[in-house]
Length: 142
Image (cartoon, rainbow, N blue to C red; front, side, top):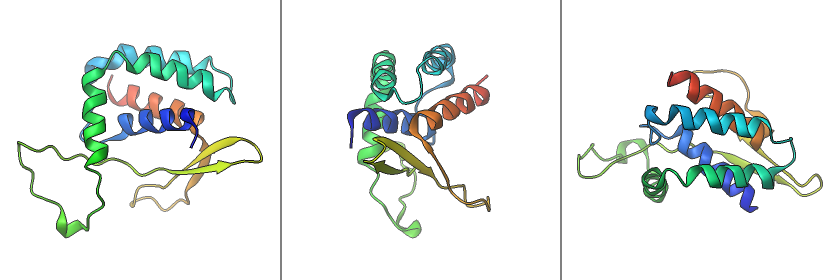
C-alpha cells in the first residue's frame, strides 16, 4: 500500500472512530485542513498526504489514542465484546476496503453503508472520501 494511502486511511479512521478521538475543540483546525485539501488537485495524492501529515502533527495525543484504538481492533464476535471498563478504552474503528488499481495508479475505497441503509456500497477515490468525511465531521461538530 502506498504511503499516501496509509495516510488517508489514518485520517479516515481518526474522523470516523467512535467514541470520537478528535474532539470538537479541533473544529477550526479541521476546517483549515478541509480548505487545504480542497485546493489539492484530484490525483495529487502525495501532496494531499503531505498536507495531512503536517496537519496531524498538532495532535500528538490523538495520534497515540488512534494507534491504541487500531491496535485493539481485534475482530471479535458480538458476544465477545468486553464490558466497558473505565481503565480500558474501547473504540469502534471503521473498516475500509482499499482497492489498489495498478493500471490507473489510483487507490479507491469502498464504503459499505451502515446496516440500516439499503443502498449498495459506493466506490470512490480516497481523497474524495476524505473531503466528504471532513465536511461531515465539521457539520456534526459546529
